[in-house]
Figure 1: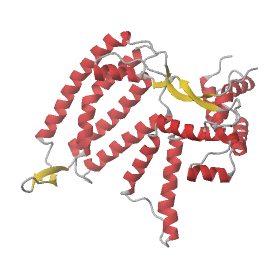
Figure 2 (figure 1 turned 180 degrees about the vertical axis):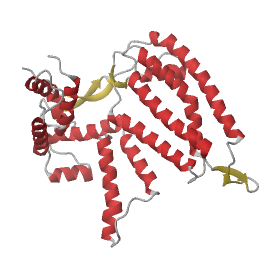
Figure 3 (figure 1 turned 30 degrees about the vertical axis):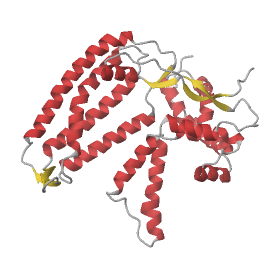
Figure 4 (figure 1 turned 60 degrees about the vertical axis):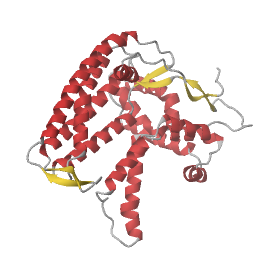
Length: 369
């Protein structure tokens, strides 16, 4: 039976009420069952089914969650939880860096700093100040940027059984698994849209900013930064922008020639698994783009001297043509093309290296029927 993609998305959306480990094992089975019950013309779940899924999902989360004392020891002192709750720990480690975790973490910090601390000191709650926004931005990027190495290190500490511990079909060990690589098609498109948005905002700031940050000599071996008013676009800035466009065009021509020649010759990759950009990747690009656009607005309206937007505009004008060529090649190229392949070809001018297996979690025992 063919399931309508809209119905499948609806099911997967509401199945998020269940723990990640539960979805990993039963999501496909439940989706097929709900599709049979709903009929061939259904495009989404009924309200009653949604309520039932959410209620059962949260009940499953509460039932399989460790006792509070183990949760606090794990959160505050990084201690291992008992073996029956290792599935919960695995879900927690895999969720690190997700957009939901970022939103909740930032919201918690804002509530503590802007509401709880003022109330405790007798002051009135207030909104975060402008000086706190860079700190919140850095915190968000730090959470989103937690890489696979950090997650593997935490998995090795909290998930691998200790000596003498009985092995079950749910026990996990570290072994060699396929290496995850992002698809070229989705990743290049995501980067192109983000860089184009940030570049346009930065270019507008370069053209409209009433003042810029400059440097003047203040004596022997001394340079001082000053704020200088502007009347039009300075000549050096114009030269930098035009040069970036020219060099970017040449880089795009070179990238297209190399990709056309080397993509068909790339080695066969047996040790990788292609994955589309996840919500974490999209959130990182969105956050970086929003940060660049915000700074461009601040500098373009004269609230700060023009400085950062110049670097963003020059970098975008130089890199965007080659990135657009890469996106076009990825869209029309083979389905097994990874972004690391096109990046390697464009940046080095040679064929990409053959991937090797990476460490990952594997079942200690295989269940047999």
